[in-house]
Amino acid sequence: MELTNENVLGLLIDNFGEDHIRDAYDPDGIMTFFTDRDTIVPLIQYLYDEESLQIRFLTTMCGIHYPDQKEKELCVMYQLHSLRHNYRVRIKVYLSAADPVMPTLTHLYATANWMERETFDFYGIIFNGHPNLTRILNVEDMEYHPMLKQYPLEDQTREDKIDTFFGR
Amino acid sequence: MATETKDIKATTALEDHKGYRELVLQHENDSTLTTLNLGPTHPATHGIFQNILKMDGEIIKSAVPTIGYIHRAFEKIAERRPFYQITPLTDRMNYCSAPINNMGYHMTVEKLLGITIPKRAQYIRVIMMELARISDHLICNSVIGVDSGALTGFLYVMQEREKIYDIYEEVCGARLTTNMGRIGGMERDLSPKAIHLIEEFLVRFPKVWGEFENMLTRNRIFIDRTEGVSPISAERALNYGFTGPNLRAAGVDYDVRVMNPYSSYEDFDFEIPVGTNGDIYDRFMVRNEEIWQSLKIIKQAVTNLPEGSYHADAPHYYLPPKQAVYTSMEALIYHFKIVMGETDAPKGEVYHSVEGGNGELGFYLISDGGRSPYRLHFRRPCFIYYQAYSELIVGSQLSDAILTLSSLNVIAGELDS
Image: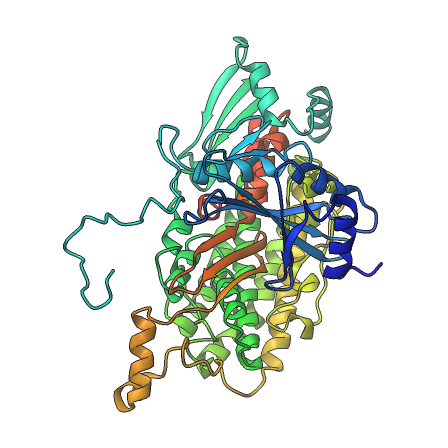
């Protein structure tokens, strides 16, 4: 099987169903789709085990915050790479801010350990089953998760920087 | 030393996914062990790294790394700055090879904007990126020398790094944190002086590097210190997300330049060196060979440097020449809009990766159509592979741990972003 985005998507939908592999799109040549947190571990395990795919390298993962989307405020992005076929895939999971819990991938990828700690540190997403989910780059006693959009970079009450022409 | 290391490793059976944490808990209350605080500012660690070690005599039983000492919130800052102001942030990640970071970022934004840059600019980028790779590997390899007792070689090749910085200075005006190039190409063409400096470097550097190489590659003391120390298997390295020279030393020939060519790397003839068992000696040798390959690429690029423009025709994003700003209305408007960050980027989502000094340096950029990125995530190779450090040093001696750290080439700026 030639690894094109359509083929891989078809294969995944056959195995997991359209309810779990949703809204696929292709922003930059890398197929991106949404799934849910109950599917993510079996899905990534499947990508790892399936001989025709061999997607066995977790390139990166990160959190994204969309404060305006109700019930879908947080997003976790995983990007995986099949070094055998040079095929990349991007998987996203939406989470609600009230329940920011994801299963951990550390059982499958050792590299997920610090990536998940970083995502927890900056977005407050809790990875169930993680061996040591503590802050990694920020100080331990920090009381918020700084990459969330409600924490602006500069002090909004400053008056010496008001720019009447550009409003920022 | 090498055989001893292996035996001890075999007795500290790590359960793969639990990693160092299990070891730490296992030794937490063991009062026969000594706690040694290595870092954060230890002269032997070349950067701000802290590791709390549990030692049984000279043998490391467990290690807890603490990172984040120079975390500067680049991802957060990037969400507020206009696109062109983010380049200086990328300088400060891997400051040993800043041009690679700069150009990787520029290529990411160009991918988002859909700009194709002319061949000449691509070749100039290749030259600068390969020079940066040489300076990065040069530091790493000479520091491996320092940590195994050979300081002279380090000071000797450091002069050559200064020559590389002279070239940077001629091309962009800065030496360490370069802010080189622009979105859409280079900010100026390669001057005759720059070409002269590069050609001079291509003649002189091989001699110097050859001498350095002769000093270490067949040196009995050096081989005894490095061979078989902190090895990592290819499977484990992939599982840990290793990329770049450290992965290639373990025997996996993954190189972004070949697998996903960017900036015309497909035009050049070069080889990817791979090691066999991923120990310090292999990492040293892989980097060593990559320096020769980089020289080969630079030679080809300088010889075949195409004619043409050094920047793309993208007036909305690429600053107009200064003379035009003073004389033409259009140029003045573009200049003003770009500098004030009033040009909106299209909506989109891109990932672009380049082969940095330490591996796959990726930029994941989400644009919501505004003046600055909605989200910019850096895949920093150091951050990803430094988590294997504890596993690599457990069971080895303290002096080998220092050597392991320098052979992984962990750059604090890239680690902490």
